[in-house]
Length: 322
Figure (cartoon, rainbow, N blue to C red):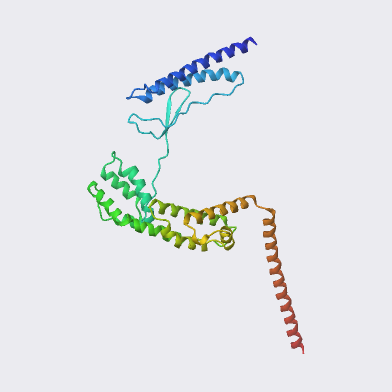
């Protein structure tokens, strides 16, 4: 019993020491040296880690759980920019830094409705990066282009002086607001139809494509009234008949905007997806009945054809024997 009380006293001392170190770290954060803020904080964190490890041993002997190592993430570099790395502290108090996977831009192949997305990402990470020279930016641009887009600047040699010219050529060909708008409307009109109400996967794909193109048109500042009158009836025709009747029942669907149609589409689709996830017995019985009916029908047709053939052969045999 005395041994247990002694261990509890040791644990209390370690806990008090750890609390003091935590307060010291909080106090040190605003006072960190501008030249080496990570060093000052790292030393304080390492000291706290060593104290926690000392505390962990008595707890383990008492049947308690081990304390997790400290794992602060995304520290700030000396320049004030976020350093994309994960920092963890080993039992020896050393900082281990592991680089996170860098984001990669999607290649641009010349599909005009994808130009805004590509250029926004490229300009943010590369074109506006002052640490890259123009020739480096041009090399990155070549890397992320393919197909017709790459052919647009194929005649330019890879030099820093040609980088701005390459960007201007690409913008001249692909940065056309009206053409991008038409491309999104055409994508909506040309989406494949879905014929079965139970085919929720294709219905979800149709809905997601409609939502994505509609959001793109709104981002371009297109008035929804200018394309809803054409697109909404076209999308409605691509829906299964029973699905379409369900979402339009009691609604003034002839004057629906794109948002109103998508809202009704989404609500019914979510119900269908939830119903399919549960999978009622009646659905399974109906499917089994349909399969059995099909098999019986095929067997009956085959049996009838076989009997007719035998009867015809018997008749021919009778004629020949006469």
